[in-house]
Image: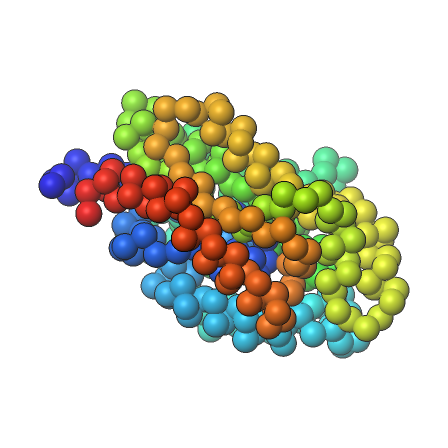
Length: 330
């Protein structure tokens, strides 16, 4: 049995991807989020990251996402008038406030380091376009992208809004001189940023003793038109919205949706190839069916549970669990 001081550090990365992501994390025999030294997430993965750091269970997060999601994603003309968004941004913010209270990044979960990825445009210099951003509960002076320090009085609610701000679906949040956009624009699979943060924090000499666990949101074997998948999933009853949303903001929305689907798996493959000696485990079942990021219907939830169960019953999954348990020595 390893002594606590010599236990390898556990690093967790959580992809974005709407309701798909909430179904796929499986129990490895312990509270791995409490055991983790660093957790990073994008969009729904970001919400899971901060929710687990706040002490909420996977079941609590799933139930909240399903219950609130069915109301938040209801299309109403008032949403467009009040917040210029298809979904109910106000209700989403209120639900997040109940989940995280008034916590700010600087006083949040001091025992576990965590971050969410987002994209930001400088309001004063909008012509420069969006840049990748990290919002964390710790400072990292050697971070390659901004901000390197915790933004002053930045709330957890605002950070989660920033990582999940899909254009038009939700209104884009602002903070001081920046407008935020969904983290999926650059890093829907945040494993590369998670690895970079771990190297910065723990040092390159120690990185091969770390255990990296990456949670995907399901990848598709069959090639499909992902943009059509997203737009058709906005069950608004309004033909203009369902058929023209991609044309209204073809860029960056198209880029975000592409990263939410095909690119996440490609990033995993590239990371795995570039880091053959790391203790790296990717949990990502096949979800070979068109499911929109805002789809909380019973058939879709049942399908995701079925595929997640199929994956957790697989030889691949069981072998990874055994290896992780052996490395963590529990």
